[in-house]
Length: 429
Image (cartoon, rainbow, N blue to C red):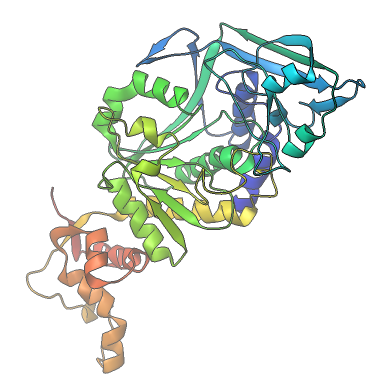
């Protein structure tokens, strides 16, 4: 089974859950993820409501399993059973009957997308309400409407999980995504699915130069909570970080750069995307919108970029009921996995190399080039010879790749050959 298929199956399983920034369905999501990687331990954390985390406070825990709006004839206009998105997230418990004109204050819709309904939340201000299509809203008849929301909002905890894979050094490569959106496939399910696939891949690596840490937390408040508890360690150890979101569709790829587009993560992901031959879009940090906001905030300064397929806020299905399982695909998820896997491979190999011989080495006696030289064989071995020519300890593999105009995917097996026969060594920093 391909990683794309396994990721899609995981998306399908977690899609129906009514996730929010806290609550039981977040925990159920982690239980499902854990069942897909039973040999890998997800370290779970619960942070109590009321805990101060930087400039924020962990809110009360919210849970809701039933909510609906009945019309004047007693029929249900919208029902949470049909879609979690029909309920405004963090709605207060409610059982009230109001005339239509008063009920309209609690109804949400999209005039410019009249056939879908929006995802709406109110985490930090007390509200209740329902989401519906604009076509539904326009068809509502005068009369009394009965709103029922069987929710609870009380002290509890915020849940997040992390996985750690030690390497040869304590320097870390950090991946994050979030578990806080209900019933949206690309905007929510694809990120945790990719993190799960990466956990499988990283755990199976025969050798890890770097240590790897994978974090799943509710967006914004979860990232802030994680930072508040781990900032010193993160700043000391993280070499490159990647936020993964909206990675399941099959349209394009997107990179949201760091604040100054100058981190190691910027270099790695840009190099992989540029050399992939695939269509991709670049966005400056001013177009940010996910947890790169928190990890790249002034004073935090984690070297992070964000990888998407179609970027959040850009694709028309974003934060609507149209962000369903039809929007993502096995192929789209597989493509994102392949890009991140290439980033990991590049990071593992991206060192400054130096040749061990004085002058140009004799390659033929080591079986690295044909023993008979011709115009054709010269061209065939040019990448190898150029790689050696710039192995002077000044440039890492990304830098050499740009200088000699050869993709890193071609250079990596050549590095293996050259180190294997003793012609390359890693330059000391």
